[in-house]
Amino acid sequence: MTTPQEELLPATRRSLSHRIAAAQADGRAPSLVAAVVRGGQTVWHGSRTSVDGHGPDENVQYRIGSITKTFTAVLVLRLRDEGLLDLGDPLEKHLPGTGAGEATIAQLLAHTAGLAAETPGPWWERSPASLRPELADVLGEQPFLHPVGRLHHYSNPGYTLLGALVEEVRGAAWEEVLRREVLEPLGLHRTSGLPQAPHAGGWAVHPWADVMMPEPAEDLGRMAPAGQLWSTTDDLARFAVFLVEGDDRVLSAESLREMRTPAAPLEAEELAAGDTYGLGLQVVHRSGRILAGHSGSLPGFMAALVIGVRDDVSAVVLTNCTSGPQPLAVAADLVRIVAEAEPRIPEPWRPATEIDPSVLELAGPWYWGTQGCALRLTADGVIEMGPLAGAGRRSRFRPNDEGTWTGLDGYYTGELLRAVRRPDGSLSHLDLGSFVFTRQPYDQSAPVPGGVDPEGWRGIA
Image (cartoon, helix red, strand yellow):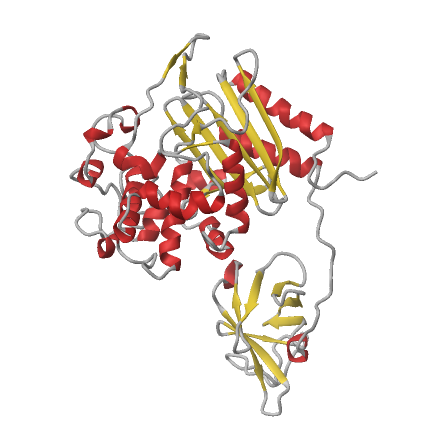
């Protein structure tokens, strides 16, 4: 008897339930709710609560903190894709007079603009937004702490600037633009700037006693694009599907892949931990898996959304306490549990429907000098290049209209691959970013840079 693809096995469901139960108990959280997504749909939901009776379900709102930044980044990438700005543009070009205009839009997205982590004045998450009515109140007199573009330094004010950029270009409030362009098309009807019942209350749990008190829930005002949103596991599960598959009404899968690509230089500690940052998305290495997503926290709430693209498993964890559980670690464990217990079943192999003989001629072994590699053609028209043996450079290449290919990943990302033919039409060699690849090591009939010794290969006399 087979198990439907959309269902999880009982043992897997129990392991997931055990993980969140341990997180809620060990982290002393008033409540914790979680969801797992596979194959484009939610396949598991669970919750634990300190209150007897009905636990929170997938429709209960929690504050999601900095997961809001991913939503803001989606809005900015939409502007880029519409040709209204370029990620390399300095902020000043579109939003003049901030005092931080030398930073580029990409640097703000990746937290490499050199801005301070927090705003001047009192703790912005627990103080009225009226204290920071203008961008100048968010940035202060000296917004830069580091050289622009040199260091990854997480900056909440940086995302306030991005929200202001969206408002400037669209001519409407950030939340209005978000609802119209992202929330409504994706069906995220339970994601909002202010809480909507049913919603959880935020709590602070005493570190040395099993008692707690409520946390204030401030409207963040100007800081909203950095952390304002409330949402549910159901809505965030839908958002996780979008972050993997894309939706042409909102943002393409290619642009979302760009968001998941590391864009920030790492410090030694970050490199050792395997953590980096893309464009509005964290990229982390956990249990041998590369996960993208974002964590979030505001007084009274902690949250995490992670997606494992290769395993086709994503997870959402929300809790209503200021500290205690580690939602990102829990979400990563939920992905691991499902991926290990029920590995993704590959799609059936299918041959290509047709192939150009001149392209098929490229398949097989090639040599860059003496280093062997192999080119393989996939059914979707992509060329895969990798070493014949051992470690080496691996890249995939997409076809271009003029008979060339562009690198998609690895060392050759963006580089052009070109097949060079002799006057009689026969294949001479491959040119890849000035590297010459030949059918034989240092083929004498190919134009190898530096030439090939006419006496050819020899032993030691």
